[in-house]
Length: 167
Image: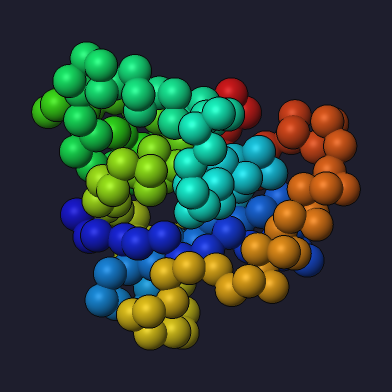
């Protein structure tokens, strides 16, 4: 398994869905994953201070897990089947299948490491530029994504990207 870090959530002109980009820790490869607008918002909200008065579903899940002494040890992206990435959260040495976007949102909130299988990164990864300090999206990219969210309608949440299942 190869460790990956959060790179960015980007809205592209080629697709009507945001793209989550994970980057190889210490390496040049990136793993682009198409996600829903709601998933993009959940991931980006993990980078902002938690709102104690209005916790997100992911924040609530972390609190519930904590009450049961369950720790998110890692997120592992283990494969791709029919264009959909397969991910697992390691919870107290038990693997639980999850959507990649939910796994990333939880890993970012909990500080758990994220990994991609070497085979998957070799097959689906692309070479990107940037140095080791490019983990956070640029302010204009975040604003562009927020503008996208402001104009998205409910029907947009029913469509799935090529690598993300509809819940």
